[in-house]
Length: 191
Image (tube, rainbow, N blue to C red; front, side, top):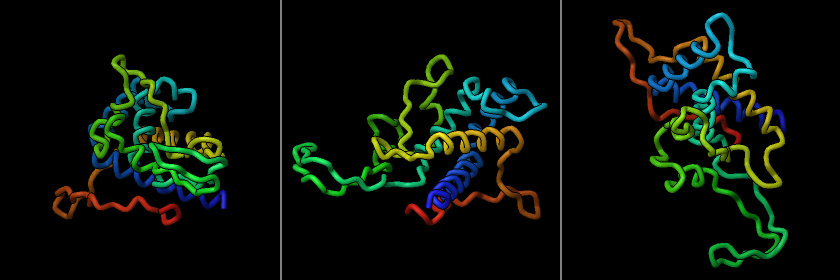
């Protein structure tokens, strides 16, 4: 089960990151310029570079916000009676965190349906204080593979950006073929 969950979420997020970078060329170019400036072109980015690549980090965070592989958190049972926004919830009730709704909260994320890594960048070009990555869950039942998953996704994104340009395909006449915006980021396990 653990291997399945890890592979399904990583595949889903990788597909989503490829799609989002391909349709957001300006984001891709800015990240590639950052990698070239910090890392150079003679090697791939590594984890020692992560603190010095804030825009790549912002892309990683925005992919997880925009395309979380699980729209609902793991079920939790209340350990005691609770009241939430005036509603009484009995001990033992199963509750689910609505990750999709939390990552689309307009009070926190302006234009939440837009892919925008800049929302994680501060006025000095560094990562801002928003460390909310809800894709791994929260509370006592946070994903046990959170740190491995984070490292895996970050290095995939950084390495692909260092090596490739994700672009639209071309037809036999050299014309760009539009990317279908109805992409399916589902790998079948969590939704």
